[in-house]
Length: 70
Image 1: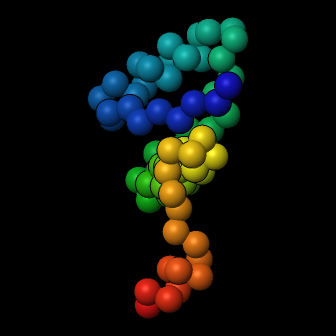
Image 2 (image 1 turned 135 degrees about the vertical axis):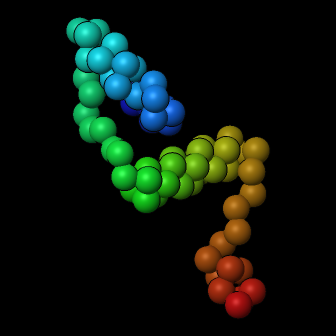
Protein backbone atom coordinates (compact mmCIF):
# COMPACT_ATOMS: atom_id res chain seq x y z
CA UNK A 1 0.00 0.00 0.00
CA UNK A 2 1.23 3.47 -0.80
CA UNK A 3 0.19 6.52 1.21
CA UNK A 4 0.74 10.24 0.66
CA UNK A 5 0.68 12.34 3.82
CA UNK A 6 0.76 16.08 4.43
CA UNK A 7 2.43 16.68 7.79
CA UNK A 8 2.75 20.11 9.39
CA UNK A 9 6.34 21.34 9.47
CA UNK A 10 6.82 21.23 13.21
CA UNK A 11 5.81 17.54 13.45
CA UNK A 12 7.44 16.35 10.22
CA UNK A 13 10.90 15.35 11.52
CA UNK A 14 9.45 13.42 14.48
CA UNK A 15 6.98 11.59 12.27
CA UNK A 16 9.66 10.69 9.70
CA UNK A 17 11.89 9.23 12.45
CA UNK A 18 8.93 7.23 13.71
CA UNK A 19 8.24 5.83 10.24
CA UNK A 20 11.89 4.98 9.62
CA UNK A 21 12.00 3.03 12.89
CA UNK A 22 9.31 0.63 11.66
CA UNK A 23 10.80 -2.33 9.80
CA UNK A 24 7.73 -2.79 7.59
CA UNK A 25 7.69 0.82 6.33
CA UNK A 26 9.91 1.96 3.48
CA UNK A 27 10.17 5.72 2.99
CA UNK A 28 10.46 6.11 -0.77
CA UNK A 29 10.72 9.89 -1.06
CA UNK A 30 10.39 12.96 1.13
CA UNK A 31 9.22 16.12 -0.60
CA UNK A 32 9.79 19.46 1.09
CA UNK A 33 9.16 21.70 -1.93
CA UNK A 34 5.62 23.11 -1.73
CA UNK A 35 5.20 23.33 -5.51
CA UNK A 36 6.10 19.67 -5.96
CA UNK A 37 3.90 18.76 -3.02
CA UNK A 38 0.95 20.56 -4.61
CA UNK A 39 1.55 18.82 -7.95
CA UNK A 40 1.55 15.44 -6.21
CA UNK A 41 -1.62 16.34 -4.32
CA UNK A 42 -3.31 17.37 -7.58
CA UNK A 43 -2.29 14.05 -9.14
CA UNK A 44 -3.60 12.10 -6.15
CA UNK A 45 -6.90 14.01 -6.41
CA UNK A 46 -7.12 13.14 -10.10
CA UNK A 47 -6.62 9.43 -9.34
CA UNK A 48 -9.31 9.67 -6.68
CA UNK A 49 -11.67 11.21 -9.25
CA UNK A 50 -10.95 8.31 -11.62
CA UNK A 51 -11.72 5.81 -8.85
CA UNK A 52 -15.03 7.56 -8.17
CA UNK A 53 -15.80 7.56 -11.91
CA UNK A 54 -15.10 3.82 -12.16
CA UNK A 55 -17.45 3.22 -9.22
CA UNK A 56 -20.15 5.25 -10.98
CA UNK A 57 -20.16 7.89 -8.25
CA UNK A 58 -18.82 10.76 -10.36
CA UNK A 59 -19.30 11.96 -13.90
CA UNK A 60 -16.23 13.36 -15.62
CA UNK A 61 -16.15 15.95 -18.42
CA UNK A 62 -14.64 14.73 -21.69
CA UNK A 63 -11.71 16.59 -23.23
CA UNK A 64 -13.91 17.48 -26.21
CA UNK A 65 -16.55 19.07 -23.94
CA UNK A 66 -13.84 20.94 -22.08
CA UNK A 67 -12.42 22.34 -25.32
CA UNK A 68 -15.90 23.25 -26.57
CA UNK A 69 -16.37 25.41 -23.48
CA UNK A 70 -13.36 27.51 -24.46
